[in-house]
Image 1 (cartoon, helix red, strand yellow):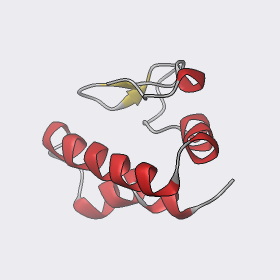
Image 2 (cartoon, helix red, strand yellow; image 1 turned 30 degrees about the vertical axis):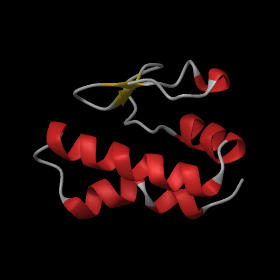
Image 3 (tube, one colour; image 1 turned 120 degrees about the vertical axis):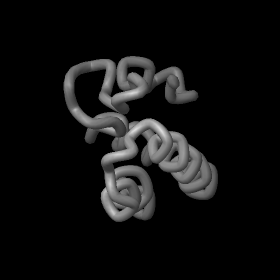
Length: 80
């Protein structure tokens, strides 16, 4: 699954582990978050992050809902 933003091409999610294509960091990595916060409308970002969280929940059965929320949604309220 690729981030739909040309400037973030190096920070795509590698499934089913949901790691960043730039390394072994969990996706969205800090760089992907920064790029997304700077380049994506807040409403669209929150909506997409919710979609990513639902998709990740299917792939990462051992991760709790609270961890998924923290990883995929909580940071979308931040503004760079």
